[in-house]
Length: 453
Image 1: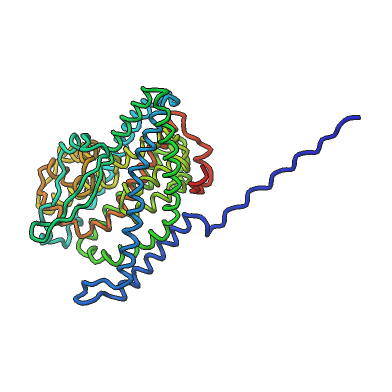
Image 2 (image 1 turned 120 degrees about the vertical axis):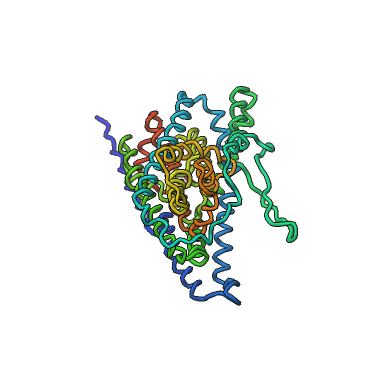
């Protein structure tokens, strides 16, 4: 008698995650809540002479600063543990050298495309850029970008790449603020990883320790990420109160030109690159939305770098060994908003304000600085420092930087959002080109569940 078998019961389809539990939806709610809280804080007004912030403004300020600090505090342990463990395991990645070279090449390609867009938009909007702007705000910037900063930034001052920045004067005293060079930390970690790779079996305990520490760091990171809606609400609310939109009266044309250029890169340039490599455009933006939105509200590529790395690996399907190298490098030297579009349009603005005609040589220099200069300011990265490097290369007055400081926070939101999006884009397309991208992960509905490792 033949033995019959009972067919296996088909697994029930997974229950869709409720919309209100998704982090992306919660961040949108945080954005809206922050806008409303900011308007309420403005309505409450300030204290004596309009200088003492009300209780809501103080609350938003402290919450926003605390959240950015929480993100930043994980940068060093994440880079150290991820890079050492990934480099030590590079024997599993046959094309590691090609990945590194292609990363730098595509950093340059996307920077060049972005600066071309910035120059074109700057030339088209040139007749209106300086309308209503007076020279009252012109002043020499406190920090100036220098080409030697790249070489100095490569040399670690200590094993941790840490330093101290002093603020204040002799009369009132100085305040010390700890800071760090992510480029130095990256290089130190790569050196340790290569050493562990060369040592072999004897280095296995160190590699195992860093891998275990990385898992712990990522767990803590997930807890911090879950606070993103609260941090988003606080940061947006503080932005509404602190900066408002009054500065747009005189510099509205400049801000509008800058956002138009960034929108062109975001809507046309990046999608064209994705299409060229056979990757879904809408899917990409769904995948990177968490880091794009966080970059917009925090205005810190370095602060959201841990999130960028997680999104690149878990939502885009980039291998961990490669993502832990490309993302920290990109957070230091890949800034399409700050290092390409902004200096291009700002240089045209400042040249027009001072009545200086720019020729083809000047525009070629702007493109050169955009592609190469972001690495030259890696030790002191920042949009203002990058602008001063561009102005000094072109021979334009550095005092023009002061004209744009009034709208710096407003434009910095869009710049940072574009920066972090580009920092996730390049590892994805390079992985696709080299055949190491997990396409199934890329095409899945992003859940942002970092504790699912």
